[in-house]
Amino acid sequence: MNSEEKTATDGGATPGIDQEQLYTTVYSATKDAMLATVATVVYLGLAAFFVFGGIDLALSNSGMSSLVWGLGVSVIGFVIAAEATGVTSLLSRFR
Image (cartoon, rainbow, N blue to C red; front, top):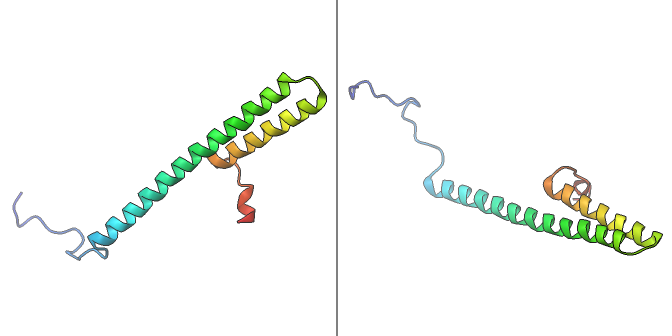
C-alpha cells in the first residue's frame, strides 16, 4: 500500500476530547463499576444471611409465631436479593 493511498477516514479532524479528559472519564466509570460490584456482593451476602437465618428460625423452633417470623425474615432476604440484582425496583420510587 502506498503512502499516497493512506487517507484519513475522518477527514483528518482532531478529536473533540483530549487524553486527560478521556482518562478521567474512564477512571470514573471504572471506579463506579467496581463500587457497584462490591455493593452488590455485600447486599447478596446480607440477603443470604436473612434467607438462611429465617429458614433456620422457622424450622428450629416449634410454634406458629416462630414459623411466621422465620418466613417473614426470609422474604425480606429475598427482597434484598431482588433489589441488589435489579430484578425489582421497589425502592426507586422513593429516591
